Length: 113
Length: 255
Image (cartoon, rainbow over all chains, first blue to last red; front, top):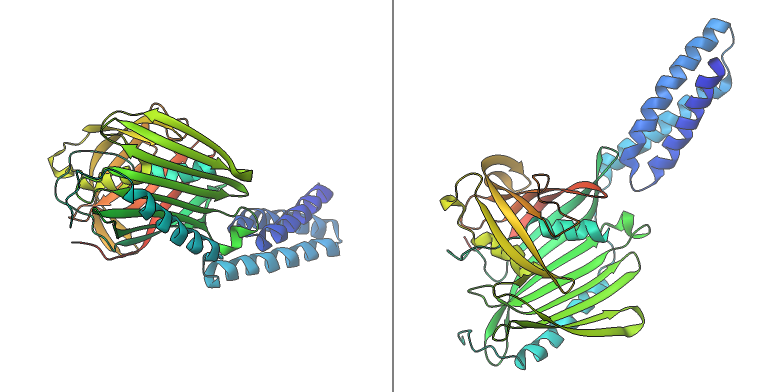
């Protein structure tokens, strides 16, 4: 049982670290929470047995670091759009082409302003 | 992701009789599109709706533009640079030319529709990767609009005269096919948005012809209950998940 919870805690904490560095870092809170719960259970069982393995403390450290990073990203990272240079050029090009095409169309039902 | 974007646009789509003009050139609406991943909403893209005047030697048309751009952090995973345009009659929002240029995670497609309302036909030109061009003429019903023109047409709906539960049908040409869709007015609601607390018309959007948007009440939009009737919030549910569209800023409004 002790071993099972230790493995679960370590696995969840590694998953938390991985998710925290991805764009969808918000998702890290789920394995992060699970890692803390599994870690606490593993810690409690280990303490009861008389020996706490370093790996449990390490999983706590990883989880706390990952959750810290997730929180930082959620608070301080501003969402900004990427490179739009090509799109801007495309827009201008498209508008020019459209005006040429519209010149050839029958627009009789529109009032000339 | 294509489905997601179609859904976002589809959400705010419908048609009705024109009443007071709510749309003017120079308007810019910016939205944040979020996608629900395991119960957590992640901001994935910025959607911009813009209007401007376009002058030809014969007339002045209204240029409606819709852009979707993924946020920088997603660009390495799934880059979207979509551009949807429609050139319409400024009074009736009848489309004359529609252009769609999509770049979604390496998938390219360019579509051009030239409307002929006298003959009720649309000349379409589809260009895909490696300049593969396909031309096709499509017969349409009168009143059929492209998705961008329909998106703006919703704002000319007189919701005040509609009773709760009242429905309106409309026809959109998308991917060279006519799609019948329907909106249902669900009443007024006050919601908090980035541009303040707004009293809105709550509207359900759906279609029996579409696999993307089902005709149920999972897809909802909130339009301000004022003369501008801008969409400030949208919720959608598609086969691959669910998400939201929230207004970020609104400038150049007519009223």
